[in-house]
Length: 355
Image 1 (cartoon, rainbow, N blue to C red):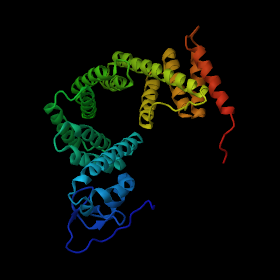
Image 2 (image 1 turned 90 degrees about the horizontal axis):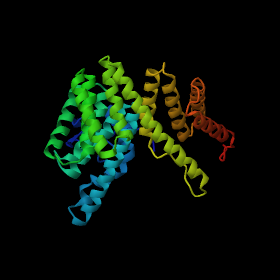
Image 3 (image 1 turned 45 degrees about the vertical axis):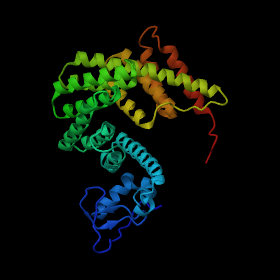
Image 4 (image 1 turned 60 degrees about the vertical axis):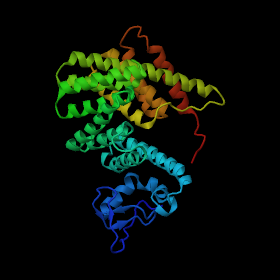
């Protein structure tokens, strides 16, 4: 399939709305023939953002003749819409993790639109879609739109107070990020405090989800020039990720020793990008603290070992080992040396699938 959709003029008298901006459309996707655009720029943006992933699904969902109001089609239609929701969520999250906020917009917009079709308007099930669309617009500095989206999400949560800790946690994290950007630092601390509370209730105090709240709160304290609290929070971020990554490495080693095991990290690409950013931020902040340098670089070494990037893993592991040697009897020295040997051993193994 081509990476570009070529414009196709609509018949005269046909009035449709643009998929991206809802203005009058003049172009039609020639593949699914049920998606329309006001100009070629929006057509191409939607193709790159999400349409190439869902084009064929839309043919079924948006075809009035195929649906024909037959009750037996309703269940199938619901399943197709739920599949669309999941695809759009994953695509939007992936693009946001890569910093591609503009490209994430079409997927996030369709995620919200399809969620409304499935769940209805102004319900708590729409909150994840509102928050994801807000994240995309934060990256583009569309702050007035972000505030509007978060207001709608907050209203849905207020109408459903028993919606669960996870929904409250995600809402407060998004509100805290907006308040940080707009300079409302006291409001940001309030929201990140709630973020941490709800995350700890849902996932536990040592969860990596809760850890994200600590990291964002530390950033606020840095902006407030309260370095002592920031140092403490960053140390907690490092501690939690070190525990988590150590468990993942041990699990991968055990799976590798099992002939039927599959050596795969138990976190996705979005999470990997996020933790890499957090740990590098902490490393820069803690550059004069030898003990923290050991811990953070050991974390980064384990992270890239899990990802299979032995060059990066070796570099961070060597740094961790050098820093640990400056501290007599450092309790991580043995673990770091073991990881270093493991990385070096895997680098020497021949490629099972040479090109």
